Length: 90
Image (cartoon, rainbow, N blue to C red):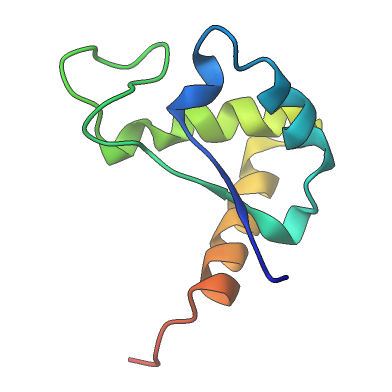
């Protein structure tokens, strides 16, 4: 179907424990993360306003769930973005 599964700050909310199960089974080439800016800041982020820079907290959570290094997951996420949202050459 060509779909992707994106994880956001929602994974940290009570009642979202099933997100960890899903995080472990999604194929690596279909993973994305997002910020939910300006709302839903993840733990450890400022509670005033969520910002794109806090996406790293969610990415670290995802790497932990999948048992991979954060830098390895980061490379995969960039590759996924490029493949799913192909950008025109500059």
